[in-house]
Amino acid sequence: MEHALNPSRLRFTLLQARNPADEARLDEQRAFAARLGVPAEDLRSIDVLSAKLDDSVLEGCDVLLVGGSGEYSVLDAHTPIVDFIDFLARAADSGCPIFASCFGFQALVQGLGGSVVADEDNAEVGTYWLERLPAATNDPLFHDVPDGFWAQLGHKDRAETMPTCLVPLARSAVTPYQAFRMRDRPVYGTQFHPELTWRDNRSRFERYMVQYGRLFGEEEAVRRLESHRPSPEANTLLGRFVERVVRAGEGSS
Image 1 (cartoon, rainbow, N blue to C red):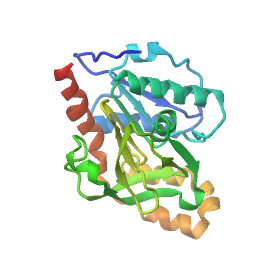
Image 2 (cartoon, rainbow, N blue to C red):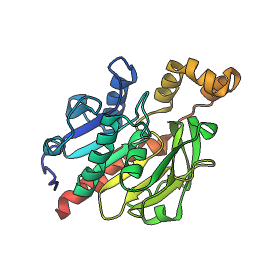
Image 3 (spheres, rainbow, N blue to C red):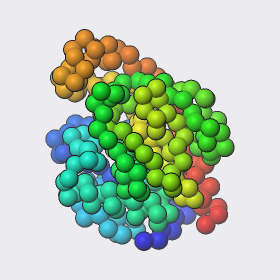
């Protein structure tokens, strides 16, 4: 599977693992389009739970995006999820530009030879302070992000070991891997959600308030709800990815 970038108007494909009734499905599409600064119609959505994922997916795609997962985990022994992880790893190796957040981040870690574990005790849901790692200093995407920055999170699983082909770029107080780039490929992943503003993330939190009340306890869930705050640096990353990684790659291809 080889990938050649279309030099004309970029075509974005968003892989989603969300049930049809999941209200976050459309919200996620709008959020990615908004952070990329493109019309919503420029973003094609593919449901990985029902679609056949093969080389044809990349034929009409210049940039592959992956978001969250709603009710699914990369640890699920569910055939569509297993097939999705395998496809995403092959797409990354093909040279297709990829930006994957949260579920997509974990899928790439697992598909490329690392490991992901369930860790509800350290679940991060809300706005959290992240720290750049040394490798970010000379990274095209992260080099001018502040040493510490706020980001929107919503996960219970986390990466435990990283494959050697991925370079860790950020961490949080309880999660050692919050961002990576792939060596020699235009591929990035973030455990956090750069596509979500704090208002987006708060709205999503409110939607799942009953579940979070059971997970954290009602008092702690309310505290986390009220702790949401802006994350301007994280919200620039998707646009920077297009300009600094994807467009830069056009000139060298």
